[in-house]
Every structure is written in structure tokens, then in C-alpha cells.
Length: 150
Image (cartoon, rainbow, N blue to C red):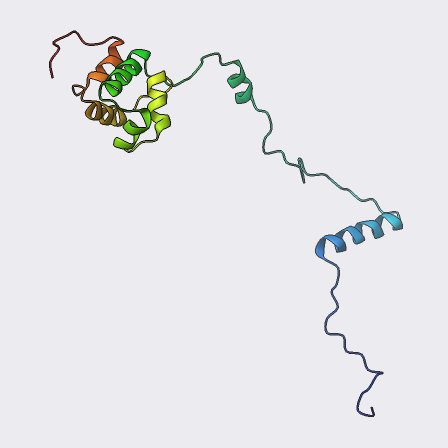
């Protein structure tokens, strides 16, 4: 126990005040001495003001135009459904055959799908329709005349 010296203490590092603390302490000391201290607050300092309302927001609120995507018509859905049933396929079978999800076929048949020419082309080939029949129905809104030809 003779080797251990209990009286000596080693302090490795003592942290001083940060810059902000030193500044605030200096301001408080000056105020205590009665000196004039001028302070100014920065606008929106420490607040989340990045999402403030601007003139453009009000302009967008007044906008009345409704923007939406065009959907396939019910006639397209009927052509798909008739072609699928004539081949004896379920929606799931047709979807598997064209590498799509069954919900895609259900959406096309019910008229909820946003038209995609690539998917329509795959459906046409799978159900044996003339190429571009579904796309023609989509644009004109009616079935082609009998004998329209492939």
C-alpha cells in the first residue's frame, strides 16, 4: 500500500464554456453592471418556417380544374371479358398468361385501369383478338364493324 498515493489527483481535461454560453454570460454580466445591451432576434430563428404559406399556395387553392387520368372504357372491358370467356380462361389464368397480376385484368374489365398499350397488346395476343382492336375501342369508344379485318 505504500506505492499507492491517494493524495494526488490527475485531471485530464476540464471543458470550458461553449461559445454560446460564454456570449450569454458576457451579456448577463454587462446587464448586471448596468451597461446598455442591444439585442436583436433573427427572423424565424429556431422555428420551422420552411412551409410558410405563400402567394402561390393561395393561387393553387383557387384552381378549379380537376386533373385526372383517363380510364379504359367499359367497352374495352367487355371485349376483354368476352374474349377471355370464349377461351375458357379465368382472370387469374389470363393474368398468368400475360405475366401481370390478376388485379390488372380485373381493373381493365371493370373500367378502372389507366390504359397501357403494352398491357393491351399482351391481352389482345392472349385472347386472340385482332391486333389493335382493344386500342381502337379505347380511342373510338365502340367496337369495330364486323369484318373489320386483321
